[in-house]
Length: 495
Image (cartoon, rainbow, N blue to C red; front, side, top):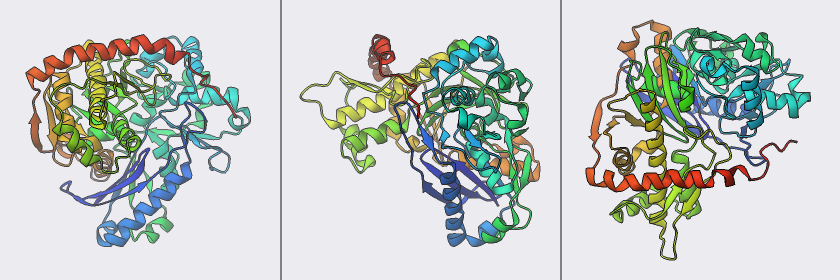
């Protein structure tokens, strides 16, 4: 048995699989998000650990025999988060998350200091990355900055709690701006530019490496064996790729989770920062990936349903599909948390355009689904500009439950999309596969297989043609509003 633990933004998920990659059991424990100021996004690292322990207790209660047979644990997690530890290895403040937009000025600062950084780090400096957040802390919270002993990423804080080891792996380190992607080693100049010393960062491993053993007292509490290995794991994008077998050049997927990604595996490092793509080290050795990152995905649908008082998302999706005969007359810019690809604009915000007195809730929900689809079409265009082609991306994540939404995306993009069996298992499944690699040292392709395709969703040519002018209008709307987004209140309030 192997266990994957994913430290997400909305929940911690634990997933047990057997040697044939069949899911045996899973547990989900919800998390809350704090937004103490505009553009801020934080969570308490101890909440992740409490949720992890709750998930483990649930697995033990319902599946004690399966949990006792676990030989390895893989970790996955939301990327870019800054977990700051003091001399006692306790968090000094809440973690600053991937969708936090306060460190805009610091992005300019680090690129001024290191003009070649985008080619080394695989992406231009963006506020959600870890390094600019540390520079912001040095400027605005010097008392905290001066007491930092260690900076960890979210899943690696859980590793510390599980094993006592301070280690990260390549795919999560890739999102900090501190990793030299080509050599897969820390970039000492980038670390120095943020005011840190190399000793304040964790050691580096590959995602399929063993990085420690579960503490004896935890293994006893959960009824596990005495030598359960904890694998390096990966950032959630990379572990999503491991879960759907996207490890060979050209294999890829679209993730419809809290955020969205269009991910394509590559066999070499090909930085394309001008397209605002993320070119990062993969969670297995000798592999990289290119990714267009959207900060908004299924979270937009959850937000819209909540605002409209809809408690059953499945029901409102069915009603929306029933009245869907043509593109919505309303256009939605899905930038509730700003945007990365293709805008690198933390100031951007969500907008409904074109509403009238006869606009119905279903029309607005359709606009939300289409808005995320338009954003994914922008992501597809950026990948094409980088000569990165994925012939048949699969769709994973919570949004993959809706075949209707997948059809909308296929119609907008004009490209076929695959629906996988078990597409909603997500990063925790990939983390469990990395645990298997760490324990059994099998060939990557033997373990990281593509799931069975349930259906290939092909675009409707007439709907695709109807969407093309709407896509152009979607793009013009952002361009027209960009300066207005920039003129909102300052993004750098401090305590």
